[in-house]
Length: 383
Ligand SMILES: Cc1cc2nc3c(=O)[nH]c(=O)nc-3n(C[C@H](O)[C@H](O)[C@H](O)COP(=O)(O)O)c2cc1C
Image (tube, rainbow, N blue to C red):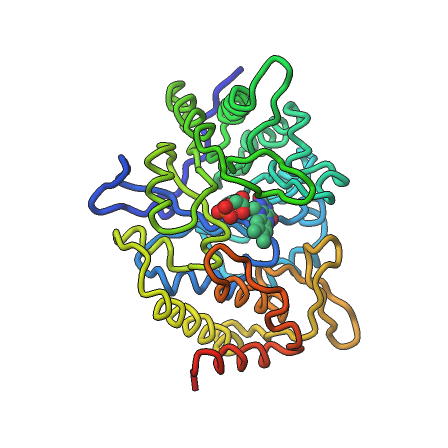
């Protein structure tokens, strides 16, 4: 099998650690793709709270077939004329080499930093659509989708993949199969592979239990042992600043991706890079809340983005939020747009006590973003 040099990872993706810790002098810090949570205001919050840190941000998952063919779908995802962002990686659900390539070319021409193939989504809609983790039942197809884009001479941005631990087979353990899969993708020139250290899980809980970071560690050493250039990113088990260092130290990964804990503590990466721990919980929460409120209140002025009240979640398997505008229904991805449901969800995460997702009942009665904002201000005594 031929070994391709992957498109290089941009230097702006790395944050340098001073002094070097956990065997690393630089590291790639990534905000995980999260449907309904990877919206522009929240991305601005990461940048505001961590001004000295480069954070690579993954969008929520989009559908490559629609993205490659439908200008209105692309507008629903990114609005009109979005500013380029070299640290934004656009994630796709795809099961077709050509639509993944065409979608990647659009991403590149929009000035975004990379594309990622979702090979980990465990949801029912992924099973029905044959993408995400279900696509990994056909490794050849996964390889062909990625290779077709990596090998296209027009593609200059990194082509990435996000996987889960592979299911065991009679003759091979999960760990052996995951290492084999990662090596196969590395050898076709995938620039960066994120490993979420869990199996697909069961229908009622897809992120149950601790992630198995020893599988990630084995993948790191296998890729490095073969002299391959693919960057390996570890994902799972971060529930506090200390875990970021412990995870990187244990796995030896080139980067770390965090999901839920960044929703609770969007200042996490800055604290890690500055060598600070947790602490000052109430004061910290107030700082996060105030920064988020300010971004929301300035959105219209700074981004021309209206805070949309008329949202409802759940349509099309929860991937889109629907708004009614001038009598017509539009579906907008929360990667760019924000709305009542997205804002409610963020405050639920921020206000949740440690380890809890936060009560669904929080803000349940609010029908307008303004009501949510006023409720939060009242709770924190903010004028
Ligand atoms: C609300 C939510 C939405 C998610 N959406 C996606 C997605 O669109 N694509 C994806 O690859 N993973 C998705 N994930 C999984 C995360 O990217 C991540 O792999 C997982 O949460 C484990 O990391 P963590 O323990 O740091 O949260 C989602 C997770 C959450 C909590």
